[in-house]
Image (cartoon, rainbow, N blue to C red; front, side, top):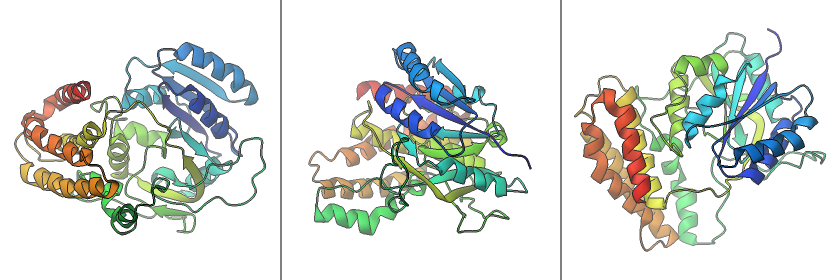
Length: 359
């Protein structure tokens, strides 16, 4: 097997400085990309493109730079538009606030190279607690401990600490997703020992990479999900996992800065996270008809209501924004279940836009 190539695909909106910093870090790799593809839905995208191509492209001889606008402000649409330009073996779909350590891409590609039987669908990096050294600095040892959660809250609240330490598994990605086949598909890959790569069920969007053929076979990202497209990463990685294994590269490290963005208020976000999972389930699960799924989806939302209420109480949020988001999802559940399956891509996209506009 020859040396595999990789392309960096980044969707961005109104985060120029963060984008430039992340591109600088993610192109300063011990194993550089073949391509950098940016899809920008900002109004001033041409100005940002000029800066990127002036400041960064000259520093990466031999790397092809593609910087294009998006016809929609939609993460899934932008990821798909970016992949159209991908000519590499592997596509790195990273957020514009994701920062790879200098050897991260090399470690990820090492896992792909070890997959002699082409069993892999995708590889993700592990999350690091601290940002990597700047590209001009010399790495001075391993970073903070790899973690699967966001940076720790410094509020000092004992209740919040209890929630995070004792109940954090209840907020794992798998708990916010309804598997289309009734279960997840984690599996090991021949030639990849567990100290190099471990099987996982789903990927987080900030750190996911896929073989290009796996992206095509899965049909790309689901454009039924609009704007921030909550759950698009779980949906796509699950669909890939039906055919190919998902592995986390143990030695690959990435820091997710989680830069503040223009987001809907908390109750709307929670509502969409949950309704998106249900709409995706209806679209992809076999045998789900127009009126089916009320019992399982109602139970799913009822459990979330209790958990989000606990989260509100732990944070001292008197207005209970998380719990109110679940109530909103419960109110809209019958509408989602009434939509004929073949009309979901358009009708459910319209529902998301209405919820976002109402705020």
